[in-house]
Image 1 (cartoon, rainbow over the protein chains, first blue to last red):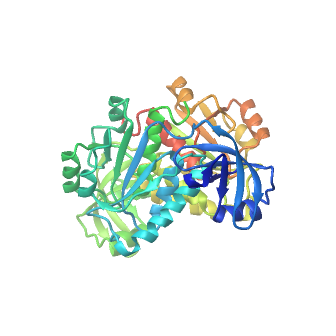
Image 2 (cartoon, rainbow over the protein chains, first blue to last red; image 1 turned 90 degrees about the horizontal axis):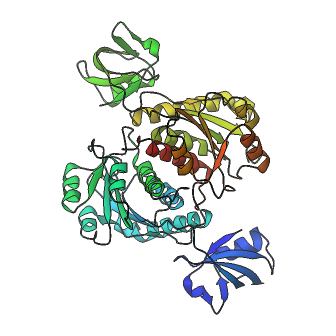
Image 3 (tube, chains in turn green, yellow; image 1 turned 180 degrees about the vertical axis):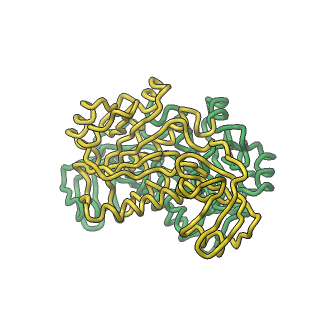
Length: 247
Length: 247
């Protein structure tokens, strides 16, 4: 069944009002009619079965039939702090990371980033990534839209790690301690931060900064993953470890 | 250290002859000189430390200093039989799948494929995918270049499953049996085939065909992965399970 995200305020007294691009999708693309059903999520974790009642050019209104059990959100929250990559790779990272189950993305300015973080483009790019996250969340049947945070430096990040039970840094220089070993040592984590370096990797000074803040460098094995692959693979392995990847 | 793949025949009597695009990369891009070292892999599992001796416009010759221990190939071989996706998604699948550790890709013609498999373009496309696999293998520090097979139908695939210890079919319709459960039930598998449907999914008739051939449908959890994401995520979880993702 088709799924749409709305703002929490769009749900009131058992009725849902859908606006924006989704109206066009429902009315013109799918040519739905009153009486047909969709799933509506409020983006903060609730999903509802909704019967459409009024379909107009500007808005679509529906009636909530029942609240659905939330099953698609992993019980472990994963934040991906991603060293800003080149070109449009961050688009891929946000899309694939959302599918796999990441809850939050933080673009990270790091020493070896090839692109400079442009403050003026900040707002526009975050809007773009947030839109990609919304569409990927709909497609993946998630009930939460991952948030894309404001770009920050590693120093700023390590000053804000209080909410995390575990901070992992996949690092080519770490040869001994593996991802699985560390995850198995921490079976009850609720919120994990994964820090991924940009194309050029993480500098030694950055590893020192992360270590001093309690982060744990880990190896993902002998194959070297690209920056746009490492975060989603780490997230998939975390979900697998906690039984969220089927089983 | 820079890595290059050569044909096995290019290694003779302790000397390596590098030809083709890699010559330009060594001589013009990296401006390497005699006495400098690179790693050369023969693409079938052997890696050598090589000191460059002669650098010309057409070929670069080097001397083998030592054979390196093969550590980057996963002990489980994974074949990805991928329902042919739209556009250039197969490029992404081959690149990311190679990074994660897949050994072989088989493009699959399936009932719900949106693109028709074009026999005339077959050769050109396989060459393209094979090139992507080679470049990704170099970057990921693999010693084996994954092979890209000739496109086949599911019927043809199921007639050729003898070499596999386990055939997994991630399938939206499977709600009970999870990937982890099945992998844990088969701890000693040597060669796994993963069958991924195209954008439109796997048809019920195809699931019946796969089941009859001994394949096991599994769920990857409640989040619905896109066709280009499912194979690499499954491969990453297989590698994680057998201790190949930093274990």
